[in-house]
Length: 530
Image (cartoon, rainbow, N blue to C red; front, side, top):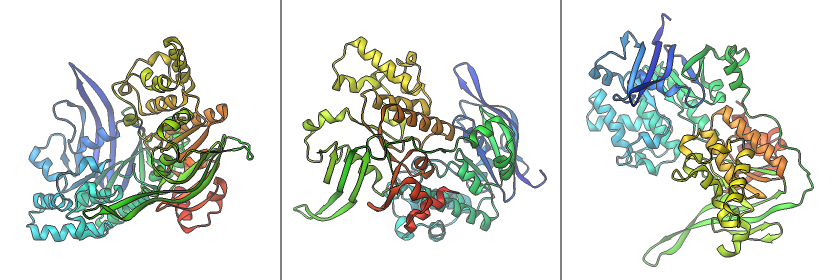
């Protein structure tokens, strides 16, 4: 295109694996015009980030092979230009926002110093000038108390604030092109909306082009002008946003679009008896001070939460990070001290000791958000799934192996792979292993803490379908924690909306979505409908 600022032409990239070179992208071609947003979409492992990192030659030098093609930025071939010229491009003419800000920000340096550094390198600014410019940009990206944040370390900021700092760092030199690699994946729907609005606003202000990498199609609808769809290292379709969503031509694109969470929760008996009856649940953490360490105040994580979870039903907990969702779940499992009543099958378990809780543990299971960190990398799949059996059941080795194989088949995993380790499985398969570990003890209740948020849409769809079928088959009760309301709508019969540790609204999920009563709930529902 005549007005293109970036053109990638038949780019093929591979990596050394011993004496061999494994090719990961094949003849990738795309272009970005000045001022436009091109969304690059596809599942994990499709080659999106490899393509993006190749633009700035950020792939490991020792193992990367550029097997063919070229990357041309405003007339410069990025693959053959000198390292000195490339350094001038990075952070100056081309900015980049990475997926995980805690991995990209230096934990040993204050925010101000990290912003000053890029201004010093690319603009030659003196400290006083750099401080003024950094302060201006922290305010521009919506950081509250910007003066104080200049002297803060990354761990002292929230996830949304860290991502805003990354945006400020990428845009402080007013680049012509911004590469945003999954910049909102770990953020709540409301924070995500703020970040996307901010990027669009700054893009218009600077007249900047943007390459936006994501696997979330709702974001693509919100931000993109054109879309390139990537599968297994190849671009399978490129067109305007309207054509991609309304008239896709490639089968893979059609599959991606049809993988958005949909459908209704499994049919249930509205009059089934309560499994959990939660009354005035409260989790407050004391703040102590002085020589005698007296309690001066409390962090009020959860205050006076009341709800009933019936047998075979699913209850959704939604709200922003820090709203008390996970704390509520941990309190129900008695993994955290709390006040109030936690009635499980008519018994108040809130005051039970660790030993008294043991008979209940096999009935109450949990599946965590990140399947990789939740599974012990030193244990085989059979050992991971069978760990609970050794504690709660008295089985022979043969019986134990049979039960493990049965649990793997339930979650559609091949039992022949049970002696492999977690790193040999994909993200979706690892989450199935985590579900099998919970399922093997035949529980009555499973706490699902953001179990699909780190998964691609197609894999997320498969896991949700699996959870529904298991619920229908075994009459399981779920407490489903999520900030993705489309997932909650698909799975949950009843929903609680939390904000700042308090329930602002609760009711039948259909009613919450169709006729929300509170402004905060309306905001969440409207954002999820984009």
